[in-house]
Amino acid sequence: MWNELTAALLLQSGYNASLATLGASLLGVAAGSAGTFLFLRKRTLVSDALAHATLPGVGLAFIAMVLLGGDGRSLTGLLLGSALSAALGLVAVDWLARRTRLPEDAAIGAVLSVFFGFGIVLLTVIQSMSSGRQAGLEGFLLGATAGMLLSDATLIAISAAFAVALLALLRRPMTMVAFDAEFAAASGISVRAVDLAIMGLVLGVTVIGLKIVGLVLIVALLVIPAVTARFWTERTDGVLWGAGVAGGISGYIGAAISAAAPGLPTGPIVVLVATALFAFSLLFAPARGVLAAVLRHRRFQLRVHRRQGLLALARGEPIHDQLTLAVLRREGLIRRDRVATPEGQAHAGKALLDERRWEIVRALWADEALAGRYDGLTPLETLLTPDELAAVDARLERPALVGA
Picture 1 (tube, helix red, strand yellow):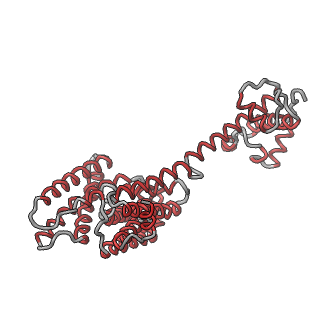
Picture 2: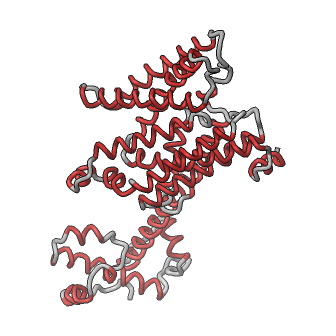
Picture 3: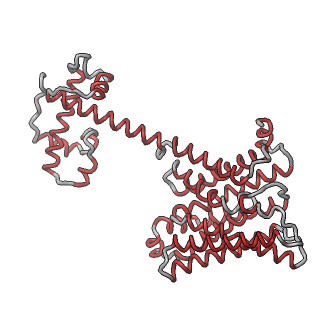
């Protein structure tokens, strides 16, 4: 298995497997990038309706091509049909949300159900047809890369490159609309046109992703890379290109795994790889990950115990909390018999001094902004200017340290 996987990752598993791997990688880049603005615009559910609305188009395109004398398996024809069907679904969602009292999520649910149900009926009808090559058409549900031709991979690559180029061109207006649509409109940007551009990009990526990931799972490839990238950066450009990288890696590794184990469907494997990247980011991202949050909370907790312990030492109060005692002992601020060391007395005096200073600050300046900046743990020297601190100290009656 490992030898087959290594060969697939190095594009040494054969012509078709290499084409599928490269095609899935390019699709992942396009899907991750296009899904970023859908995620930032908080309209990810629309992609679900779009994806399910492609199925009737696939069926109708197949029937039309068979009636015209073909075998119905032209990928270009099937994708064109799915694009028209998805566009009709998008118009239906937009019309229901804008012209009726239905909220957008209800409109999405209605369109998704109707189009998907109609598509399943068409696929059932197609299976009973005596002409055409209907075998494998159900691969558009969960994706299939077996038998991918160079023309198919080229079509996916060109479409993905076009989608990424369009994203780079429209990045600025899309960013403004995603974060503040009212400001964007006041700046002369047509919010509706930008929304349509975002939906058009998502529609295009959804259609070209049908062959590899399938309509059921393409929505995952649109959303998960963007969410993954969001854990690692606070900047829109970082999310945009990070989502592209995450999507590309998911497509590449997922298609390689599928090539190494031909019994595994490509679409679900690609999505599982994307999910693994998401889980890793959720746990280990340095700023927004769960582990980072736990460590921040733990550090804050220790600082609070240290501060409270120092104040207790300064006031001559007994310390019973074991964590507070452990923190003070670890820093050499108290001895094992709980008596403050000289260093501990100095720190305790400083903590008590800051408490007195803060009482004066609140009396002198009823400044809510300043009050919000002080967490009781940060030294006041870092929050006040030297002049402000001198004004405070001038009114200060130095506290007497108990036992000093």
